[in-house]
Image (cartoon, rainbow, N blue to C red):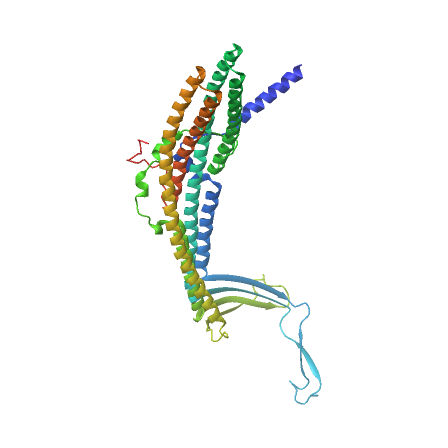
Length: 461
């Protein structure tokens, strides 16, 4: 008995500790976006890409700056390399056919030197410096594109959670109302005043609501985890959303948004296509620069020493200083038109990039018109669904009164209920559509603010 009590206490303590370690978050939509733009996994790696590009830029710059290298060498001639000479090379009276062997050098030698090299001129280096800036700009644009995509992702995920929460609340309310109606109808049937079909029809509707409610609850769990993933937080952590769907919808009703002109040059995809064209232009310059000569210089300074025994650490050992200065000029003369072929390839690639930029511009203009239309339609759809919901509620109420008074069949009442339930979901979905469509429109115009407070809100819908 004592062992069971001890085990129970240990399990309880472990559970409480686990609960204490679980992090809890509470976010409005704007707070969720701000958090994601700092902790989302893609954002973190995009920042690392920029840092790596900065290091790459400095690597390129450093190749044209002074370079210093040092070396230390030691040689031990275990067996000398012998050189052969004819027999009378040093003695004219000697046998000309005889071969004399000589060993040159000392048993041991050591040398040390420093080399300072400097690139004086290289056309490809100048182009590489320009390309490194474009390379960095590419990753900065990529980071900005990631920001916009994450912002839209969080808005959509946040809206999906709110939609699921509102759907659960409405379905539970419908379930409670229908359960009461079913109980009253069952009582009436038990008294023999109505047919059993009326009860069965309501039971079918209630079963459908229970099934939908279970499904929406599962979807709510998934939507909540998807939002946590977008935010870059542990999916097992607790998350509370402080914004409400209706208030969020009202703040995203901005009729002036579609009235502004579209500046395609502000779109991040256009900027990246322009950056790509610039890269191709630099590649063409690089190929042309290879026809220019390159000039470099190097200065060497060092000491060497020779001995038959290892006496290099001896203070009396003689060290011989040497130094030299060299300049090299490399002039490309003829490559059998190979360089010309590479230049033409780079020119074709540049023309393709220009065409791609034009294509991107036209695609973005079409996309903007489509998204603007989608946003306008979402506002119209919201107005329609809100009006339809009001009508469906009145129709359902009238049918319920008629059904209770025996003036309407259970089929008509169930049809009115299904129409009401559909209108409720359409209304909720229309609110989420406004939020999502506006986010998509803001993304294409490169508008980075979220949940912007607007002066004119569409109030009468």
